[in-house]
Image 1 (cartoon, chains in turn red, yellow):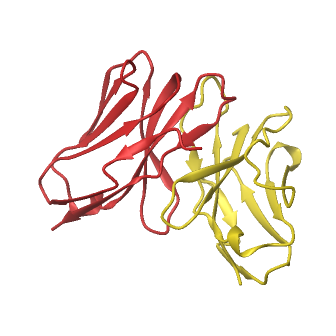
Image 2 (tube, each protein chain N blue to C red):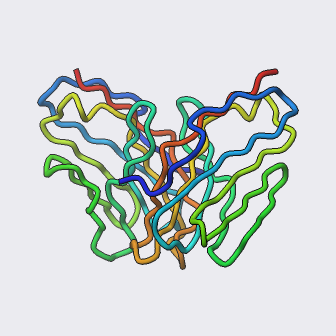
Image 3 (cartoon, chains in turn purple, green):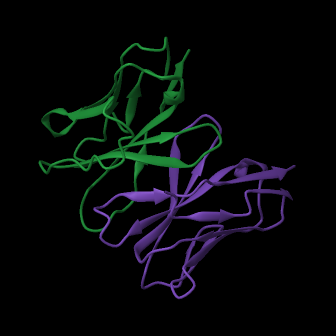
Length: 112
Length: 115
């Protein structure tokens, strides 16, 4: 069953705008990760945030984690056409024997 | 190689045939994962290998699915008597396997089409 539920399912924005994607999950976690997938390709890791962290930055990416609400958000600032891809959140559930549980993903389209 | 390598990249087979999908993880990575991604869907966990420990097979959908990891490196996912619902992209990933589940490095996937 899906652990992470991303929202929205699809997002279309103009180049230069910010993109915010949300993920909710159900159980306690060790960490939460965000991945990106270009069409027809494998997934690429973007950022990992641990359960004791609240915010993390990497370049144009900002991730927040609220363990009390069991939710995370991924913000991509100053989006580019090359950011067009599917984005997945994945959770490392406590006691789940070291496997990540992925959501269904968010399709982001950035219009040039 | 530098990354996770999967073969074949595409496989078309007839219903009822057996298929083997291969994954060559990053050298030195002790953890290896197989996931399945159906069209427009998220990733479905299949199986996880960690070092010499017994694999976590809890995600295998039926007894037609099996996987091996020889010598702690290359892994083969075998699907026997394929069905049309097995059509999907099969993704392999590896990680260092130390501590909590960290970054997974994915291959490009093997796209399976069962006619």
